[in-house]
Length: 226
Image 1 (tube, rainbow, N blue to C red):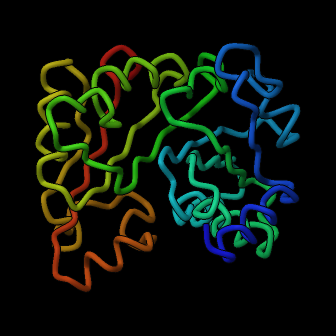
Image 2 (cartoon, rainbow, N blue to C red; image 1 turned 90 degrees about the horizontal axis):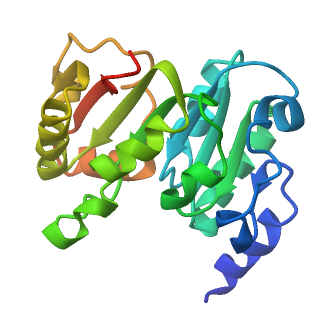
């Protein structure tokens, strides 16, 4: 492991906005589960999650844009979380936090109705069929989201991967979920007016755009939670 990564790992251990639970929390009760508002943020504002947040551009960007909401970036990569957590601390964003866990354990850390929305920004498309369960828009993951989302909570997907985009559309149709909007070319589609979906760009998104790649976007609601 490089010295830079080691430095980042050491630094996030002292960051007040980074929670790094022990592995036994995947089977036992996590102290903030059901208590994020009161015990961590100290308010009753809605909580939005960015799952697979990487460097946390959406977590911090939305946190700055919406001070009346709380945002939590979820990722297992500590050196990536370091960037978003550092930015949030430097900007004094008290409504932004980062949770270092594997996404499949999300229900161990949030209670039913505790999350008011989910962003999936350029997740690993997991193109191999044998890894379908690991796709963040698979029925397996949607069941987990259902366990923590409040009614009326939207799920957003941004991706450069056509396969993941089409797969997600199929899952939405098969599951009778409610598709609010979708586009195969986000930056050319003037009908998409979701706040900040175009103005906040991730590290990888900027690279993709520079390479001339098309960005796909969709927003949907689980069929029994609209």
